[in-house]
Length: 460
Image (tube, rainbow, N blue to C red; front, side):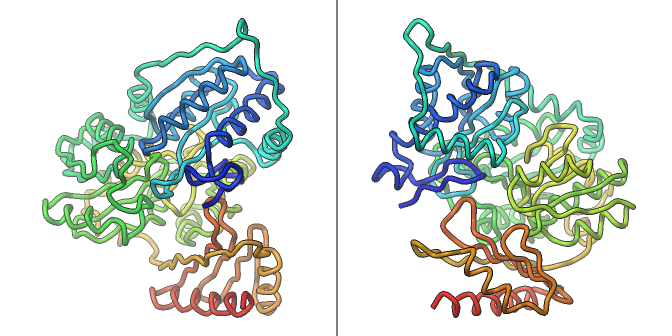
């Protein structure tokens, strides 16, 4: 079906023809290229591995681990884990890097290798290009049997991650516990089913119901935490009279909430709420990618800080956060990055901070949501056909909107008086993403529909 090599890792569908899909030869090739690149950097010869709960995870993990051992690298295998836990474990282990085996929000037939550096952060675009070049040239040398790597499976990494959250100074466990929250969690048949309930218990939440809690990779619905995929969670929150619902994606780096009345808090507003809570205690700047809501800019300005946009992609957000010394940042897909915790999207620290803010306000979820600026976003996509020239397409769109303010740092963002539209090629799927925002649902949809109609005219 497809194999995508980008800033977001090596991602593809399992099975099929090598070079076109993520097959065993492709997995070995890219793992060998990454391991060889790591050795050349004179990094400590240790790699941390972890995987989400999807069906192909064990197979892919075994291939990656044995390849790295064959290169002479030592492997620390966390087994079933989360993306942020692996990122933190790279630092705990003082490793040279890490590989997270997850296709994030993609459906069950997908998997991916997400590559980390010695700081537990995604490797840069330049380093990614070097890894891909090694893979293309098969430029790797395996170790002799006497110099093969060693293998270790540590225990307690989930507990260590949770303890770090409890120790974080802005996570108020006393306030959270005093609210006696009743929570419903959608674990989407992956590792969130293990980590999120354990975290909630540690935070003092005693009433927790887990939906789709068996870690078997048979996702009960499309795993991307979008409104149309969270109907079951919303229904259960209302049925139980719960205070809120929590949804994460399969690797637990995206986070969204459901209010007590079954309405969605909005994944765009996960970051807004956490940023508002942090900025009330810690003055500073914020960053989000340019496909995220302008509500973060409004909140930041209200607290006396400066908001900065970045290109889409976690590594781009992190780079901008470091450049402007941001105190909080992330992405509008529910990705929270707390820099003095670690530079990676982390739904678990996000839960701790979000519940701290909610507990402090002493209001219900729907009233909490009503306190923030209200914008509406429409998220659409256009399927790509083989050979489609995205840069040329976007250039033609730019010409059509030469009277508007545009930003070409990442695809094409067109600013209108009361909204915006952002078009960009996806890093994770063969599509063009078309995001828009307006002051009403109809306004956002109409902005997107008008631009998409023009894109389709150009394609035809």
